Amino acid sequence: MEDLNGHVGHRLPADFMWGYATAAQQIEGAVDEDGRGESIWDRFASAQSSKVQDGSNSNETCDSYHRYKDDVRILKQYKAKGYRFSLSWPRIIPKGGRDDPVNPLGLQYYNNLINELLAEGITPYVTLYHWDCPQALEDRYGGWRDKDEIVQDFRRYAQVCFEAFGDRVKNWITINEPYVVTIPGWFNGDCAPGRSSKRPFSADGNTETEPWIVGHNLMLAHAHAYQLYDKYYRPQQGGKLSITLNGDWVEPWSDDESSHRAAERKMAAAIGWFADPIFLGHESKIMREMLGDRLPTFTPEEWCLVKGSSDFYGCNTYTTNYIKCGGDDVSLGNSELFFQNSRGESLGDPCACPWLVSCPWGFRKHLGYLYRRYKKPILVTEAGFACKDEHLMTREEACNDVERTAYHINYLDNLLKAVIEDGVDVRSYFGWTLMDNWEWAEGYIPRFGVTYVDFKTKQRYPKDSAGAITRWFDKHLSA
Ligand code: GBH
Image (tube, rainbow, N blue to C red):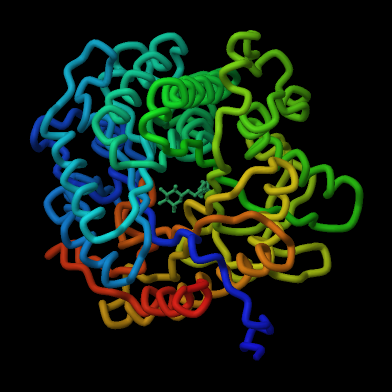
């Protein structure tokens, strides 16, 4: 029998993983408790020159440090099979460095969370680094821009985590979105540590060189963690490990050659920069063409580490753009993005975030592109939507989240088509996000949660989208 979407009773395999994702800095709060060190985002949000839109910080946010049991209960209520969360490096090693002490209370917190999840039958997917570098490392040697220091410090941090949690955690993501660490952090200066020589608010930094060095170091840090896991932990622990890259589908603005080339350049800048070395074992030709000598090179020994340092492709994807040639922004591949094409066809109206529209067919095309090019099983580690003006709504209005529901259901229908009709090997869908939280430089303005959070009481309330997603999986997972 055909359902409304025209599928003929197709389902995802029984072992398809689904659930929700979060990040430590966005939900935990308790930034000064139990020995946690300062992170670059604590510092960024407290600075006079902070770029956080509503002037907020994440000192309390959802208070998941104290309320992790509420989080697990709600995941259970949604029948989620997995939970992707990140570990806070400065909670585990407050000063961050390889000779600095480990904080037992930090380990205890994550042990409690992991044990609570497992007791409820929910599989943990753990990200080591979702942007919260210890401020001490930024102060000591400039954080991600010092290759020898940061790579060794990250390796030791990864080791501490594999030792402490690897008996129970079998799914690891080293770094969330290296592109966002580098470009907003070190090119535009919109995110911590906010370095950029392009704009008056932050005259430090060298936009010509630093972003490409930072990107290079992130790849090396990832590769060292992979090798460490592969050699010393996988034999006993038997898990999987990779990196998560963000990337959105781009559709040529018009059918001329130059729009097609712009699309290729954007994919190279946003994805190929990292994915070509890690998954294909060579640098992105287009990045080299655009950057010349400013793009660092790997030594032969480093290539051995970087090449093939992944067990799956971790994919965060949210939206789609039309694209054409123009502008001099290397981070966009010298192209410009639009929500309308040359024929005036529109992808939709932006929601709470100017960069985001719902485009389910673009999601499907994106999955196909990644699979054909990188040939790895894909874990969708994030996709999500923030309704327009949701932060101004009452709780009742916000929980009636029609647009978010449509977004996730349409994306899931297209994921199913990618799997069944296009033969793409997609193994998971983690919705961004479990609950409303602190949206980095956008503060508390966009709300991406399938759970409403009252930031005064910290109470959590399911939105309609959560129920709709649960019902979708009830119907589309094989028994
Ligand atoms: C995700 O990144 C993050 O992993 C997650 O922590 C975050 O909460 C979520 O996005 C929602 O924001 O403002 O025009 O410069 C998604 C990839 C890349 C999307 C940077 C927004 C900024 C575009 N993000 N991009 S712009």
